[in-house]
Figure 1 (cartoon, one colour):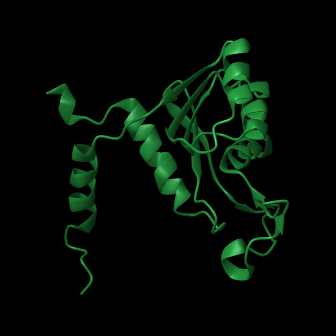
Figure 2 (cartoon, helix red, strand yellow):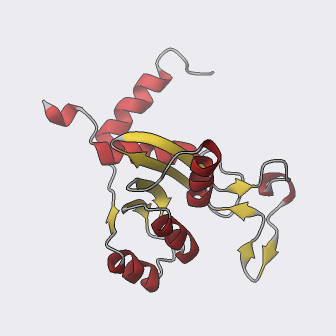
Length: 162
């Protein structure tokens, strides 16, 4: 019977995937959900600073192979905590893609103790070493399609556009 309920790691990762749909950078859609004591404390997606133009509207602002217009999803989630006065200490993050080195350092410095990710993306060896060195951990989440087929059916029930 318990396999009818979506497991916590897939539930929180699904929230990150949903957040990624708000991404405004055309290079990679990333979402992140910060969780503490099985409660969502913040969320973020990659995109421009509020009030600036977005990559989806004017293209990416590329310098040395990186879009400098975009804030990463993990940073946006941490900044939401800072803006609202919520501590990220002892939290976990669910992010659609393995965090870059700078995001990894920011997450660890903010007290994030576990990084859950869905997809590998330019995984940095030093990021993994640093995670282990400071006593945090990393875990790749696998989504079971049975929960998401059920979700799609429920979401579309009575709302199919023709």
